[in-house]
Amino acid sequence: LILPLHSSDKISPLSVCSNVPGFDLFHDPSWCPPERNLLRKFYYEAKGQEWTNSTGWVGEFNSHCEWHGVECNDEGQVINLTLGNDGLSGRISDA
Image (cartoon, rainbow, N blue to C red; front, side, top):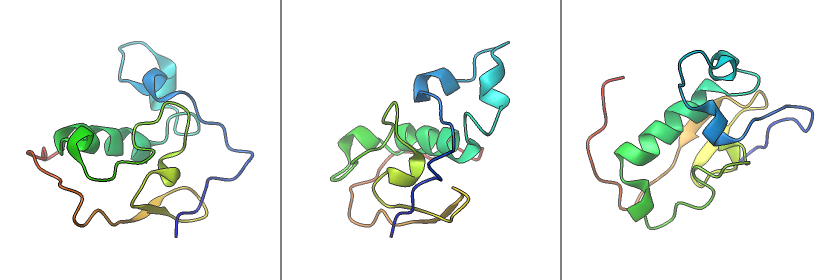
């Protein structure tokens, strides 16, 4: 079950949420949810482009709650990742 963010929630394009020095939106969780930024990092470290199913992942304009295998609560917080048999590989950082 994947629950979308509330329709009234704002979300900026994913590329705008890069950690660019002096760029204010990165630190604004209403525009750039921390979970979305961390999941994007996880996607690249786990070689997401090679996964069996990466539907929606790192989509520029969609919520992280719409990404395959990501389950969120009503507040848009990640509560579960189900990515079994998707071919994840790579090294995940401690951060």
